[in-house]
Length: 269
Image (cartoon, rainbow, N blue to C red):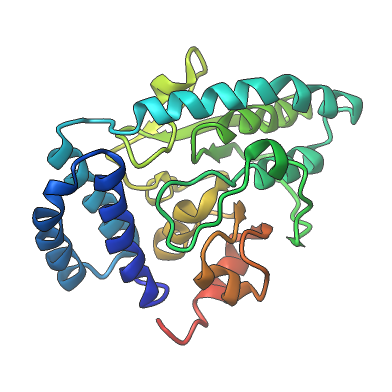
């Protein structure tokens, strides 16, 4: 489903911008033909964005077009890793503090319509504007679904905090590339579960408890999620900011139930 008609505009803007950034603006006419068909036929925002990025990969001739951008972002994340690690050590690896940092780190993006740039170093210390108090289950496996490169290094410290506090945690990523989302090979020797294709892992997780990063995973949960969840994200676009009645780029920590309640009442559905 499409949260708002502006999501279709975002799709066209995002994928056109991808080609321009990747130096293949000559392929824009071919892209627009594909996008017209996707918008006409697809009832799923998540499927439309995933399929359209596969078209980008085909048009530019790369299975991971943003691999160099991801490496640069991960370098930034590594520079922050020790600072954040020290901060959490001083707070005895408090999980709520780790979640706040992980949510605030969801600032990086390449393709969101109306996205306002803010450096990861600056954004990391922003407090959440909405923070639900959600208890994590002790008797369930917890699946941490990653999002963008760079911020993933901060997410690793959330995983560490969870493990120190006795939770059974698994990291989950898409198997195939999607924008600047991290893949297993971007994480070095870190163990991670891979879900098929390049659509959000939330289409595939059917047990345990989910902690999911970012807008794409949140929107996938609205379409396909039933497993209990917490979502750590920034309201990067006007649609989500308006739905939650917050300033754009605000940090949110909300449950999957709240996501559905807020976004499914959007009159543009």
